[in-house]
Image 1: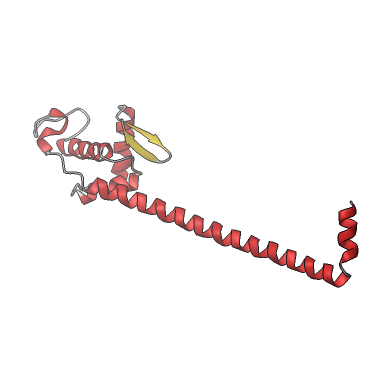
Image 2 (image 1 turned 135 degrees about the vertical axis):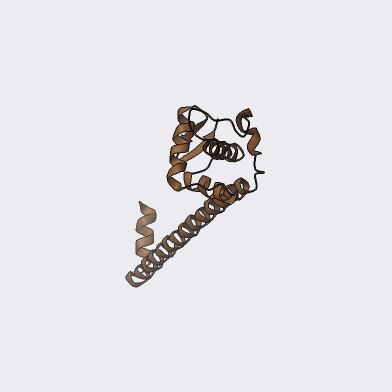
Length: 148
């Protein structure tokens, strides 16, 4: 307590006001610096996530296409009870893309299929992923699908 009393009595009121203003300014400057650093951090994280997504998409695009005659060991003219050859080929290609990546969101899978020349509509992606999930061939986590 005596240190506080000595401090108070050593400084004039004007000097204490000046020290108070300096301390408040320093605190405000630090607060501003923290806000700027936080914004820069958030921008860096967003950029890193965007680049990661672009990398996953690019890796999916660079996957060599699977020969159509070898999907699931079936011959090109074989059909299944689930649909046509074309549907089996789209599904098998989608599954191969998922196997070659570390998970993709439906939109990323759509882009990867289009990049490989597979003509699909966006609704087909949801149908295909739900079918593969029901068959136990993919799992969903945080909006992304992963081959099992």
